Length: 312
Image (tube, rainbow, N blue to C red; front, side, top):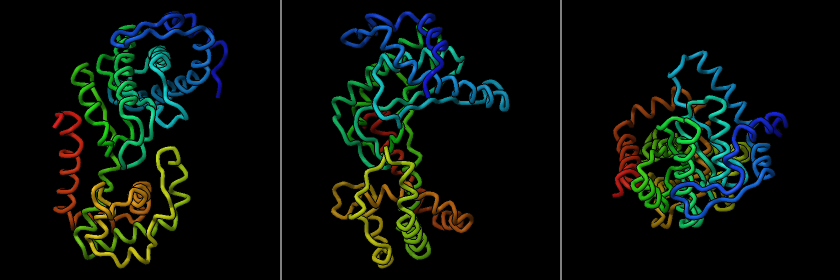
């Protein structure tokens, strides 16, 4: 929904710095903008930022000041935000007095759920470094929290860009938030299947439920999944799989010929099927805790924390 024209006019009057030649430290070339450009960006994002301010004030009123970690995300928009667009968004956030801790822009390329990055790694690295610079500029210009971090949403299993992210944060000293919640759910399923017996039976049942509800489950995530439904095995076939076959198909190992990214993405968005099992699912997690914990810990530490934060 477009912003109120009076809000846009007040915003431009209050923030003359994005209009003209915008020089952001650590970005090679200045960005040239005009009033029409800033108006277009404000019309696109200002109403959403004001709504975010309303939400923040409601939540902080309920929970108390300082009791929230506030994030604003634009990662599922139609197009990536340029550094200057990000700068304008951050200026609007500052106007709303939101003590934002993380911000998640959309980058070039596909950040599909639970699978590797699909896109130009060099272009991603350029955008990532420019966004770090834009955030630093906004913090100093608009008085945003110095702890403000760049966030990568759907960040799990994006192995091909982890080196670029590590180098950028190491050189800049910037903070980073990497969102990996979904990969833990998939490691739970992997652990259940690996355990065999009732654990494997539950994993098979969750796949069957996800397969039967695939249109409904996938619709809300259309911008962050790419599934070729023709490649998905039928549940009656999966019901005959061994633990090894199920885990080889699900686990993110691109060197394994049985790995199926569509199978993995469908189970990623099929978490509701497991949730509806309630206590039955939770009891299986408890029963197979040792195997599941090993999978979750290895995945998070060895495949995410080490390459992103330690560069190993």
